[in-house]
Length: 118
Image 1 (cartoon, rainbow, N blue to C red):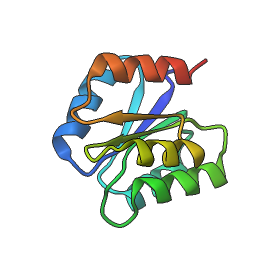
Image 2: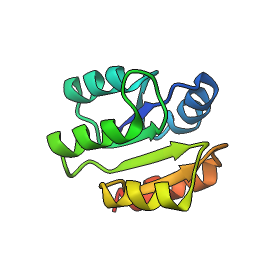
Image 3: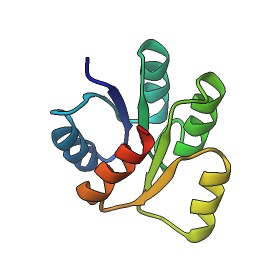
Image 4: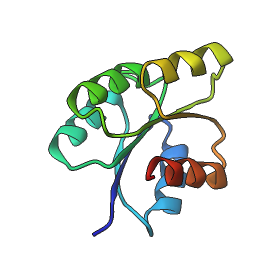
């Protein structure tokens, strides 16, 4: 059975790019905001979370905290267009496995996911 990746991203274009590129290898669930992502996370067996930082309802760091509280073993990868070294370090300290900058490069995304699966 395919492993399940939850993609939480408010930007539809980024959501679609990730879905199209990952759907052959993984079962992909999509959420347009943090609240929808949290609901899907609680209702499904998620193996990895890819989440945007800035989203309506619940941002990526808030989602990261909740996921780590519920299932600390699930890797969380943050995606942002507003990356700074400070925000990357902060996200990693709070439990993110990795941090990617937009526009996402699929080769980089796939490498980070492979690292998370080890």
